[in-house]
Amino acid sequence: MSRVLTSLSRRAAHLLAVLLLVTMAGTVLVNLMPGDPAITILGPTATPEQIAAFNAAHGYDQSLPVQYLQWLGGALTGDLGTSVHSDKPVVDALLERLPVTLELTVLALLLSLAAAVPMAVVAASRENSVFDRVLSKAASGLLSIPTFVLGVVLVYVLGVASGLLPVAGWAPLSAGLGENLRYVVLPVLALALAEFPSFYRLVRSDVVSTLQTDFVRTATVRGLPRWYILVRHVLRPSSLSLVTVGAVTFGRLLAGSIVVESLFGLPGLGNLALQSVPGKDIPMIQGIVVLVALAYVLINAVVDTSYAILDPRMRT
Image (cartoon, rainbow, N blue to C red; front, side, top):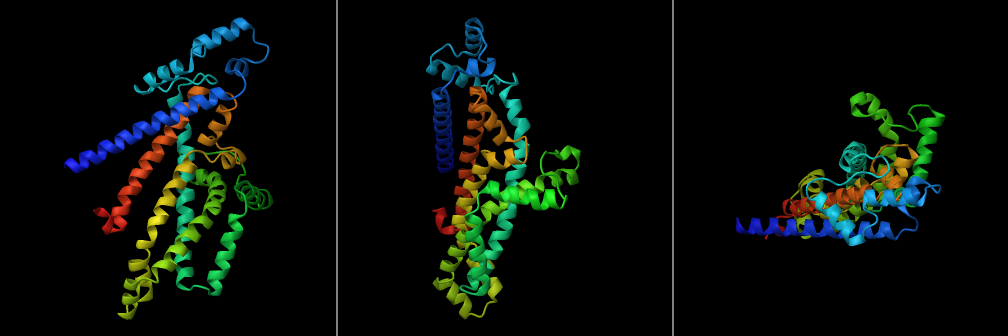
């Protein structure tokens, strides 16, 4: 019990330190950007009196440490402030945008893994075969294509040329699952195709290495079926690197796939960040940073736990 409590307290301290550092860095970096938030929001025709009133209302007339401490005091009570653009609470804006980005992230990650893992295992088990060489070249080709190019090609092929799918916009799940999927297919495909090469190459490399180990040779000599060896003895120890990369990819996609969300006109976190940074909407930027940092820390905790499940040797 004491070991568990110690581990939990360390994770909590790590989470607090990360949140403090990233939110502080976010505040400093935004304030270092050229331009005045008041002029950016009120426009170049604003009078000095209007600018002074705006700065006083939002605390921009105070020093940077005071601004951050005031924000931190509100954040500790669950109040992340109010957007200076929309005058909407930051928490409400994040909760409104999060489901869009979360759905894109989860579906793209699952689709890319569902395609990459079995293909990589089969290719590694048939190393240097035609199947292996073709998939390796295809993965290298996809790796060299930017995500926005994949998105444009998908828009033209599946949207403009064939008219099968809408090329922009969003339909929430409340509008029906079928309608939601029609709008989500293209951006999910663009993200999944972009992530597929890294997953495929990583799993293939790890499986090739695992196939050379003694315990796999022993299982082969015992006459166990090839598929059983791959699934039971090879895939599990080859998944450690995949878990780490998958977790990092999840956090990166959740942080906002700005290119894809902008290309398809999706109301997600990426689009929100794209609007907030140039407009110097400091409370909104801090809220996005907190959300992303919290996601990364929690994901890392899950990854650490999964290591012990995948490899019992790590439990000690």
